[in-house]
Image (cartoon, rainbow, N blue to C red):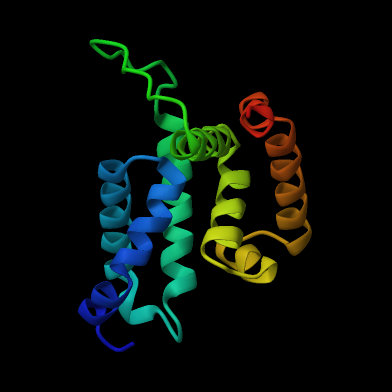
Length: 162
């Protein structure tokens, strides 16, 4: 792609989705994408070939640096949300919520590998290239992430409830 504007037009939806999967909040995801694209713009003329690996690496590195700086306190709400009536739909939503809560509980690197491999469809070598680490590291992080997800109490509870 020759033009930065063309790249942003074609990839912004996918970048926002990936950022959302990393942070779990659409507003923060948009901020993350904007920051990553601003950094990519600075180096755009130096990027050779496919810019995706470069931009995704900026995206995951920026997310990691934000995550390290952010406080990990609870977010207060004015009132407790109402519980939905039981049923198939709510069970599906509950299972998805439990899964995403568990994914958000993974380390940055583990979450990045899960998102890039399973939701972006990248191969493990592509993930390694994007994350700037060895293939062995990616495999280790993926294995540890899947192990943590398999034993996560909310996921186990969601799977066993009728």
